[in-house]
Length: 443
Image (cartoon, rainbow, N blue to C red; front, top):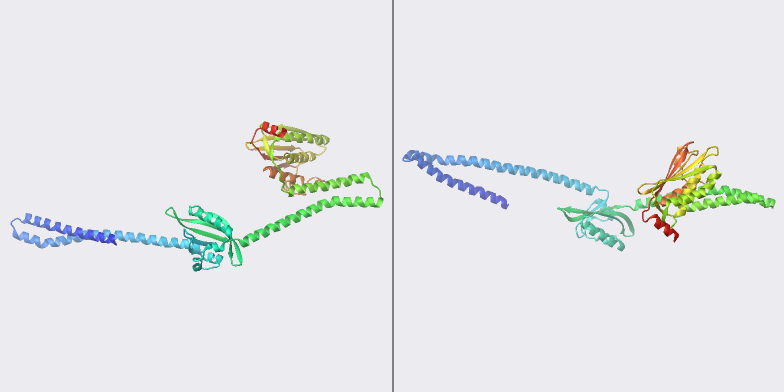
């Protein structure tokens, strides 16, 4: 309003000054032109007012036209911005009101400014009542400090997310919440609290997990019962024979001892699969572990008429962090499988290669055995699935479990009637040198 008065005063002052200037100039010009001709002077004086009106009218027209045009354009721009602002407000209102999550707008001191319909449903209270209620009444005392930390973090302009439990009378709800800062002109002026009731979702997840565990336990129990039933049946038969004959035959005892060993093997490997063992890991030289394994396996390979070779193409200081006996068990199982996969009619050979990259050690066990079909490769490592006639199917399952605990991987490449290559990948440990590890092993 003050600016409008200032503009009107300027126009009036300009009009006054122009009028004075016109009077003085017109009198001077008329006197100068008329000189002593009184008639010409009177004629000029009669029509100079009309000239002033004409000139000022034209000037005022252009001034008013320019001003009104600017005002009209400004009003048009303002109207467009108002339309855009209204459209944007409707967008934001739709985003908040039609949001499937509960949205609560809070001031800097935590006062409720606005809630959508989902928030009213979640808290089971209308907005008028929520404005006069402290949210601490819905929360457990243990959660108040956690909520304050997230609140302070959001006031610094950093969004945060958390889960908490709200209590509504004799009922409680588990909600997943997010605090989002409201930033205007690079300043935090408030925040949005966005919450979703996940009580039913969490119960469904727990039920699904429990159902999956029961299913796995059922499958595992059925598989264990099936595998142990065979040796138990043999033991039962031999016990009945011993009772009926009242004679103890060494051949029967040998077979019964083998069946008991089979049951012990199955139960021991099942313990490795099922139990989370707390075994201390320490650095080991991977080449020394392989050398020990090769000494153990050369005798069996020689008995099966299979030759073995070892090639170390890695660096000298190759250390892996883990449990040595478990890693040896993996190497023994893999090499033993390679030896047993070679038929007697073939000139068998198993090649073990040790290599390394920047952060991993690679052990390749390659044989020229019978190989496997692709569908069998997909099932390798599955408990109680074995390609061998008397295999339990637990050996590779145990190997995979051990390698997983050592943050490694186990890969199979095979071709029918050509052979199989097993790649064992283990992360390298670079905490100290091989000499330090050897000294530590000695002490």
